[in-house]
Image 1 (cartoon, rainbow, N blue to C red):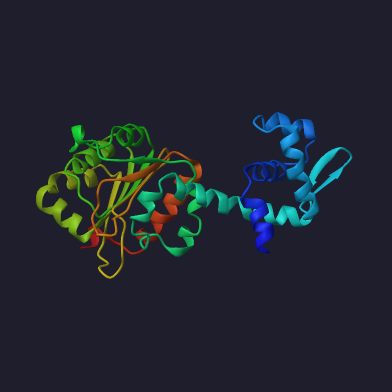
Image 2 (image 1 turned 120 degrees about the vertical axis):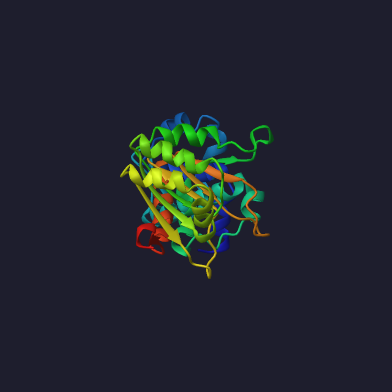
Length: 264
């Protein structure tokens, strides 16, 4: 794609919105203006003219269509725009995170996270679990969770979930597992006794790992260490189906590196 065409597509919100709308199907000018209420006819028509000149759009029988070239370009454009939205929403957060724990094939698909919230520590509840996380996980059917960061309320929380019949798959780093074994052995045994829990250990010391991955059928949470190797208790939370599917794949990536606690 030549630089002029790239500029034409990306550096105009009107042109982007118009192309993405046509990706859903042909439209008349009146239908387009109805679906793009912030765009006027006089401001849109010059933009359409430029797209027609680049053979991205044609007009037939009163309707605008994407050309074959336009279809291909807009198909590739959507993931790029969604990726930019993910990073630009909280640019400082992403700039300061270690992204190495996200494998390349999932990092390339980070656009699938979609809409999300950045959760930051609440100093008035510094030692409490996030209430949104507790609420949605407590109403879930299952929870997949990877932990290399320890929170003292998690062991009893896991036990309560397991007693409710929620299926748990927990992957703990070696350090977190040691802490559970030393100080919360009763809670771990209580989880396993319910028959609804599996606990695994990820003892890989030669790879970068995330602080937290939590995925249920309701929510996805991702916490990453910052560039200084610290977890500052900032993490992203999403309820998007695409984010949940993406998070499940990330969890399974680490699950493949684990050892079942029962085999030790």
